[in-house]
Amino acid sequence: MDVVKAVQNYINKMVNEVPGMKVLLLDAETTPIISNVMTQSSLLSHETYLVDRIDNRNRDRMRHLKCICFLRPTTDSIQLLVEELRDPCYGDYHLYFSNTIKKSSIERLAEVDEQEVVREVQEYFADYCAINPDFYSLNLSLPQHHLYGDSKHIWDGKALQRVVEGVLAVLLSLKKKPLIRYERISKMAEKLAHEVLYQIQEEGPLFDFRRTDTPPILLILDRRNDPVTPLLSQWTYQAMVHELLGIHNGRVDLSDVPDIRPELKEIVLSRDQDPFYKKNMYLNIGDLGANIKSYVEEYQSKTKLSMNIESISDMKRFVEEYPEFRKLSGNVSKHVALASELSRLYEKENLLEVSELEQSLACYEQHSSDLKSLQKLIESPNISEESKIRLVILYSLRYEKSQSNVITSLIDQLHKHGVSEHKISLIGSMIQYSGTEQRQDDLFSNESIFSKGKSAFKGLKGVENVYTQHSPHLAQTLELLIKGKLKETSYPFVGNSTKDRPQDIIVFMVGGATYEEARHVAQINASTPGVRIVLGGTTVHNSDSFLNEIQDAFYRFQQSGSPAGTRPPKFGRSRR
Image (cartoon, rainbow, N blue to C red; front, side, top):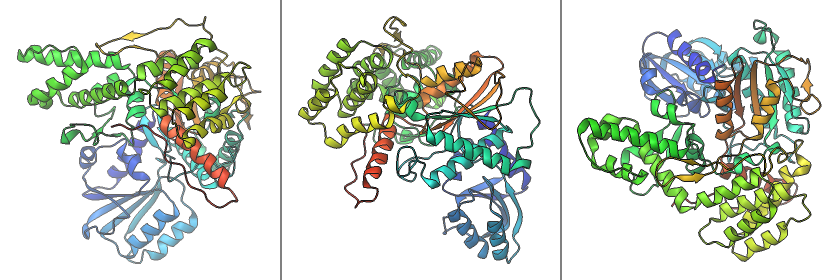
């Protein structure tokens, strides 16, 4: 099960089925699907000389070219295609849709194709963004997409339809007809499970795959059962880049980084095209720094250059002073720039200190020392408001039911130190969204102060004592599922059931997955022969996007049925 290869196979099939010089027309949603898995050069090798958007009405008329349209079968895209076929720019049109297209839409397209330029219509189920071979996303993020309807338990209608279509596309592209399990306490997971089962039954012939000895499992989970994972600072490369800078469709925007070179203002992170990234994406920042350092030292030894390199800033200086290294090193110089910016940001935000307390709150029951540390950090002018809010939320989630909790006085302390009301309101919103009453598993019971010794990694100088003890709740859930010990009372089946231990598991996280969870899934896949897991979600969260989604949802719940008030400012850290 490899979602990157599944999407690549569809794209390659498209461009190979249409011989000769051609244009590829995409829409707003299929553009990131393609850009995550294909490069311009790989498309060019299949004689695809131009990639454009169907909503670009200023395209040149080139009737000698064939046109492949790869579109989501949405109302907007169908309308754009209708306008295109009324006045075609190209000679032949080969229409590929990323999901099932309605019969009425096909009839509408046939009516407007008066010049008979359409040669074929196909459904290729590449309707999701493949990020890693075992990690995918539906890219349902603000401001375009709202997950929740009138309450925290109800889907927004459009979001539910999109998620059902996305999950079905994952199953069809992997050729799996699974049994379905869901998190019992989650009404949204239950609703999705029933909708997916209904559609599988409705689309019978599409799911007529060869039966396997052990049926695959689709496991539908809800983010609210583990709100801790997306709130934590990250210290492994891919996760840390997304937490501090944001990875959007495989790209990282570095345009506002001080003194950044023009060619590095936007960089692409691709496992397929970047062997260094593939090798290092799951490593902690210390080991990453050590690997970059050894690469630079190898170059130094070959060219007999001498420069003492002890830290990330030394490496950055070396790359700037020796432009020929930039040419020879290819992708490594961009990783030096990335590691340098990550280093600047965690020093600026004192994330070593913040992260140590985050890990303690996430992993251990030690109220007295946690409280003392938390009060000290709230007092500190060197800690950002965003970090203070995340720490108080983590404290509240852990000690919500403890009689000795002082959540109210911590909120008073935040007010006293000038933290804005809209940020502070997130603490109450998070308890309503994901407090003890909203979770079915005891998120904090599996670890105590005795269960793990604190561990720290050391790599390059300047990056040490960073704690990574936390393990996402998903890791424990998958371990139980693989061993056949995941309770049916907590994770019931919809439709047929089985007692067999699963081999193929497709996980979908309502409310968004994280790169930390993706790393754990990759580790399980690498260390558990015979088990193949693919993880996906409505989006890929970092702490800012997660808190923004909760803030937006509760703002809309409050406005439901009443005049719209002032929308709170977007939650997030400043990178300056």
